[in-house]
Image 1: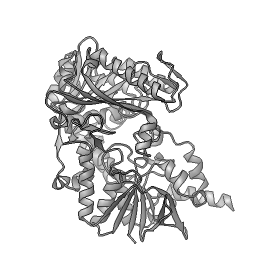
Image 2: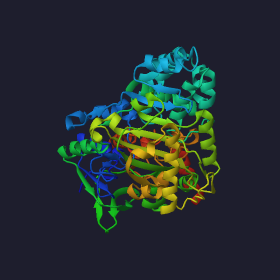
Image 3: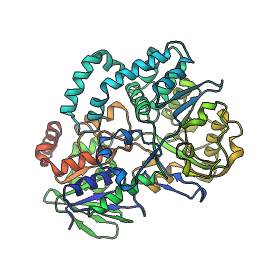
Image 4: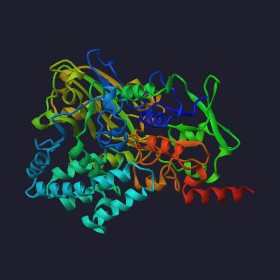
Length: 538
């Protein structure tokens, strides 16, 4: 009998398992898929000569994460690679905003859009450099981050206090308008905000766009050398050397609760696996509370709040094996690992508005990845391993384009949507289709079938919007990995601080399991809600 059973071998589950193994706990990780990794995997199925990342690809949060740094994965053979430039956002008129790890290069790029915008970017960078240690401490620790928050508050006062807090709460469109005269800086901020599901007009999208931009400025958007799965392989090797076990092809269907406490799990084949100390769940909050745990063990308030849980946008992805480089009209785009494709901030607003109305965008905002540019070993010399993804509604009410897409995502609809993304690339790289050797389509149902946490193709474990962050994640009054069931901990991106490959939800859950018992560690607000529910049942 292991001390702990971890449900899910995604990055958060594997980080949690490693930390518990470091503490001397015996660990067993159960993964439903035939291989570990969750959304951190690669394969060679588009073309045998090309390594293609299946889901996530660029990892600025991993580079910034003290959690992953503390695991010393370089000792397990993990190395990182960078494209010459971090990100480019070309425009149809030939101009291009460039994010570089050299702040002077970024500033020069933005200065070309409007005089003074280079200095404006440098000022934002200076604020980041002042606040960076406090922000990262607060971001990667359990909520509420008392010590880190206190240190950050002191830094905030020195950096402008309430004025800066207002700036971070702004919609990214407004932030861009206040900080930059030209479009370049606005594009970098707004495009990075839409790495999540934050429209240019969403409150707090300015702070998120600034955070992602500054992470790219500082750490770049690095990739694991050889493919995304190299990060997973390093985590598995480290865990195995410490005595932990990963069992793939083992779908957990139930968390066993006995005497009011989580004592193990049951798998699809009926096997009961007991855990002496804890069960950690690297699964979405709706899956944990709506499927794996029987409703009678949960407060009615939690179940009611779960009905209001909001997923982030659905995702549609295409992978390509290219016979040559992408024929960008903007030379700067050829040097960037990530390229944003949208016709200005207005194009981003139009895209997000169409999704909000349940319509499949006719000119989708595409995040385009050039993996061989970032890591030359991904494909033969002179070729490119590439991908692009865009977002679509979960519930489709119509098609803003001419293909009569309904969201059924049958073969016709998948092909038509992939063609639509390629047409978007062609607007900025005429002749793109002529260099395609092979392509693979990953529609929302396909993504979910390959990783159940990617519900409908949602990649962040729930919306990044303010109403489902901090103490509201995954539901109001939570914000910590503890659950209403002693011995059971939420270790997925549905928990604070949310999506991205950084390991913080897994680390927080592991530390909670090793720390104070539930009755001491659970937030005061959640205990109050639980008592209120129980009183109402009498």
